[in-house]
Length: 264
Image (cartoon, rainbow, N blue to C red; front, side, top):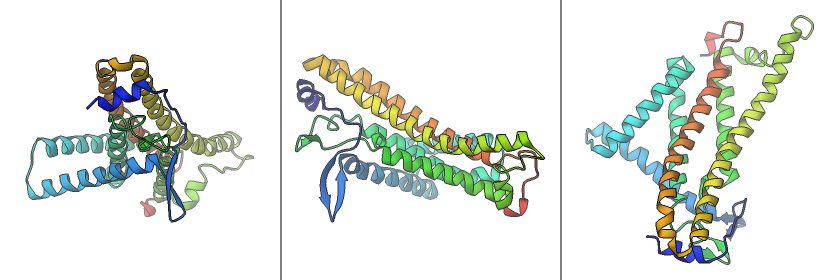
């Protein structure tokens, strides 16, 4: 298992902030994060489909029970945070799917064949999809757009606009708060994506440097750090899930006016 690490430890570490192009298919560049991401997406889809079918057929085992327990725990968390059970139950599947996608790709990123172990044309052939800004920004955009959709459903189109635009003469304080809220919408999305990317990228660099500095003793040094990264994968997935739920909760909160229930 750790043979690739031994060879990786002997080479100079290669650190790239961006995902690197491996080859081109039909004019579209294929990066090392996309190659590993295909496996990550496949495992995520298989996991959710397998567990859902097992639950429906009543064929339960320890694995499906564990995943179901985790799903129900995240669902209850969404209900508690948002405070509106109907919205939470419609929103939870999306956020929980993102949780599993992040965790699975995070764990794939710490496997021995990822990074310096296998190279193609001098570049690592595989890289964690979570360590690609394209994915983290895409997930953050999905979260922020979802928050706006549910805000419109609860407050209505004009009610949602009034969260940001208020009469500065009649309500100067509210107008100022609206500007801050508008800016916050963009800062939340940016922070959500950069926080995930930064933590995943830092974890990959940590494993790379431990393997490099420990040399041929890396099989003894790396397991403890890999176990820590497995735990961190769960934490990063949960934090992203939690922040996405919180942002939707903020969007549907009644800010001084009755929500438009006709749109809920």
